Image 1 (cartoon, one colour):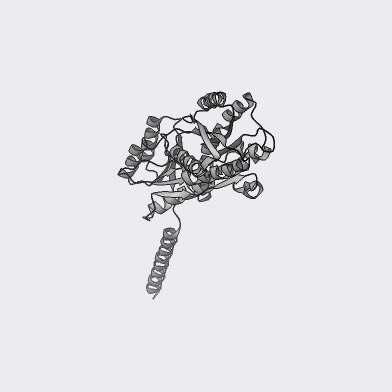
Image 2 (cartoon, helix red, strand yellow):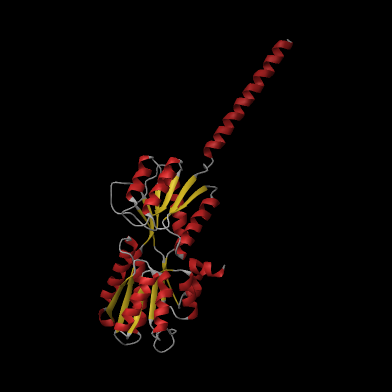
Length: 334
């Protein structure tokens, strides 16, 4: 009898243990996995890239994910090696800001071969046989909306204004979209504007400043300037001050100014009354969508090739309302 009782007790313990193990496995399988995401940025030389970098890391940390970081300092070959290192380390996903639309193709292909999901943050790739998802601002539409607002301000003068655009590096598809958005708005403006200067910058501040200085010397009556990135505003302001043309919006001789990105410099210029408008990229939306895309791709979900950030135009009339959404305004408060 004692032997039988001991046997019954032993079986009860084993059964209880098996039941607990089953419950443990079930709870583990339903819990979100902790991921390791490789984040490779081409550069951190502008406020936008720094803000994006920090937003991605914050989003990953909020979800309990680990981030492996790499910055290529403008060297595409170095970035390729960084991505290959991510592949070797078998990260769970890669978020990439490439130097341009072409050099990233081999990087995407390396991730594809290793079956590692890859998302391009704010700078999409050229068409190819590779597979990736890009989270990017709607450069054309946001630029057009920004320039449309600037044109509405120009029309209030009752004059035909001479205009300048600072064009980004045309190897960057974002720069192409912004240029085309500007041109589309100007085309619809009719006789309101005459574009007399197109300054190539290649995203270089010194080149931008030299180009603006030359344009202002050749066309002293330029009174409308759009830059394809806010980070070039210091170059523009320096050139305008040198020409005696940097005035607030309510002062005589004001040059209508507009840009794209929504950085801290733009916010300060807007607050001080010098900037008319800028197209703001929603860095928080883009970071959240980039991390979520990694999760969704790992789950086998079908995603569009491009996830668009509509952004918004901020100007003097809606600045108070939109400030909290503007990443540059938040940066400037820190």
